[in-house]
Image 1 (spheres, rainbow, N blue to C red):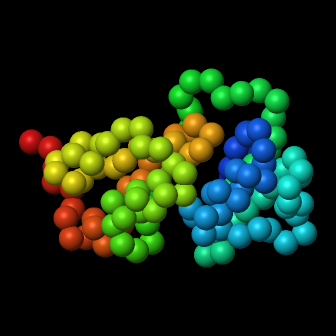
Image 2 (cartoon, helix red, strand yellow):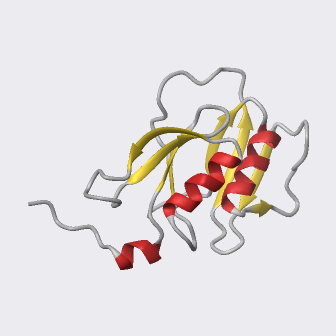
Image 3 (cartoon, rainbow, N blue to C red):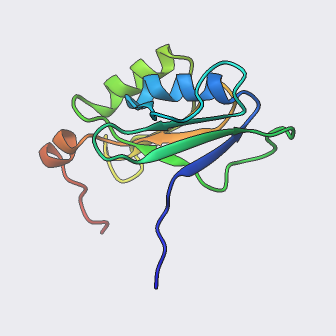
Amino acid sequence: MTSFIAHTTIDCANAFEHAEWWKQVLGYVEVADEPYGPGDEECLIASPESGQRLLFVEVPDEKHGKNRIHFDIQPHAGSRDEEVRRVVALGATEVADRRDHYGPGIGWVVLQDPWGNEFCILRSEEERAANPMQPRS
C-alpha cells in the first residue's frame, strides 16, 4: 500500500490573502464546496488542468528562517525572465539570481512571496528545448 499527496498545506497568517496571491501567480481556482473568503481560516485552491491543490491554513506562529520545502514553478509559455518580471510586479521579491548556475541562462531565480516564503522560477519547456542544460565537465 502507498499514499498520495492530497494537497500541499501552507501555514500562514491570512489564508484568503495568501490564496488570492497564489491564484494570480499559478492560475489556480477556488474549489467548489470548500470555504473560500475573507475571514476563512482555511482556503483551498486547485489547478484547473492537473487538479493539484494548495491549502492555506491560518496559524498563530510567525515564519522563522528558510523554508524546508518550497515551490519550483515553471511558466506554461514564454520565458523564465518574463515570468520573474510578472511575479515581481504582483509583489514578489527577488532573493537570489541563479540563472547562470549551470551555465549562461540555464538556472533559476529565487523569489519570496509577500510574506517571505521562498520559491523558484525555472525555465519554460520552450527555453529548455532551445537551450538544454549542458553536462558539467
